[in-house]
Length: 191
Image 1: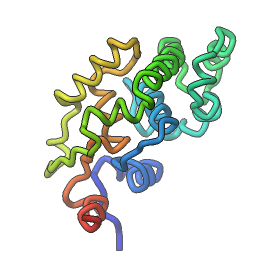
Image 2: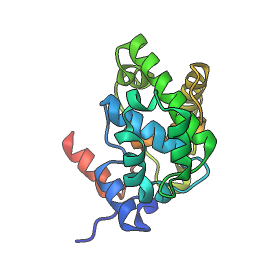
Image 3: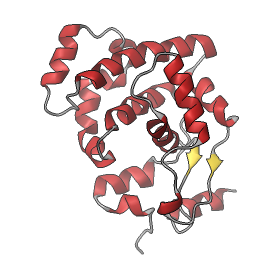
Image 4: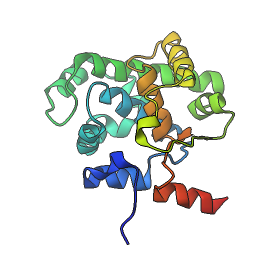
């Protein structure tokens, strides 16, 4: 029997795999949270499919998204990234990855983990939305506005409210799977 997914995930196999295995699943590992901060910030102005196609190359080029390593990137390393056709070659986004790695570690010091910081915005529990169609799913919310403003105040770059909402969806802080989606049914069965 064919799986019924959220409509956005039906255009190609990478989208389907990402939807089926990752999107909307709560994540609490700082390394994965950082990876998605970078991927979502790289996505700004591009399609998510583009990011998924480049994800393997991005992972390799950005040292497995090791924020401790990225925080120490030199001008030479940034120049190397800008020459790599397999990554997003945007000077501001490359610089933002380095800045965000540094700021990420500052949050870890302050809160004990980035996980503790980010999940505090939702009281440690995913917000389960009840949208009936993709047309109802917002690009941003008051909560993503609040988180984006806080991240910007802390010095993060390329994390506007729309990017933050996409991050929240990706990391399971919000669950926007639609009622007809098999992932919604799986969640309902776990209760």
